[in-house]
Length: 331
Ligand SMILES: Cc1cc2nc3c(=O)[nH]c(=O)nc-3n(C[C@H](O)[C@H](O)[C@H](O)COP(=O)(O)OP(=O)(O)OC[C@H]3O[C@@H](n4cnc5c(N)ncnc54)[C@H](O)[C@@H]3O)c2cc1C
Image (cartoon, rainbow, N blue to C red; front, side, top):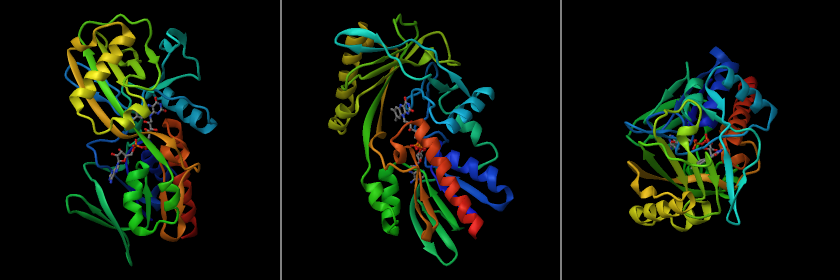
């Protein structure tokens, strides 16, 4: 069975890993990823002096199978618990931000995914622009004009709006479930300081606005020490409302808001940049582990199927792999 997986984020790589481990020589699996490397929204921006996990900040593990995978990743040295000081700002006072144990991939947010890709065929800088079913199976068209053909099954592991664009022309059976989901924008402001900042917390949650989350990335386990790499995220409502705003103006507003929250003049950072995530978080999920169309041998997965977050992406990728395994058993 020849299987194509579109997207090398956690859901796509979890699907690929599961299929490869379970089907072994019975399947030839190729992952196609538009970026230069695997990781998706679990990614790290590196400069000469600083590193920022500018997507996912940390993750929790509630599901038993996911917790077992996290424990295994921890044993293998790709994941570490993060015992940072977590606060949130309520009515002007700092409170403890309680919740389940926090984990991060280490030494970077994409390290766990990269470790999972070992032995897998992952083609990067390969943006799928179209899908076509012919007598010999699925053909993938790429943005640069290339084609890959002869796939028996497809796993589409990209954010919902990108899945919709690829699958609408195929009349995918569960298209309406994809269309019903909603993903939010997030701006990620990265501030690097050569001299360490003195902060009374490692993470600070605040209300929706230009700075609704601040984290000292450099305080995570395995990160370079010395200075401070500060990560600021805008909240979903504010981000959606400001999606097309001038970047310099927006960045200045985020710096002002984060300065007010920290009581420090963050405009003096040695390194400053802002990244826009168009599909960052999920405000309306599909409410199913994955969406499949058995008649076409296509399954769609991603964090948005299960309401977002790292744990949801992993569970969704697993569920998608199980669908393909059941098709392989019937073939
Ligand atoms: C700013 C931010 C903060 C977050 N914070 C947290 C957090 O603290 N805790 C938490 O649990 N989660 C958090 N998340 C969410 C978490 O990152 C995601 O739930 C998870 O990484 C999603 O994985 P995925 O595989 O579903 O999707 P993605 O990681 O988005 O992977 C999809 C991949 O598909 C690729 N792709 C898209 N279209 C194509 C195409 N046409 N051809 C080829 N490749 C394509 C993309 O480049 C990407 O690599 C955060 C996300 C962001 C952006």
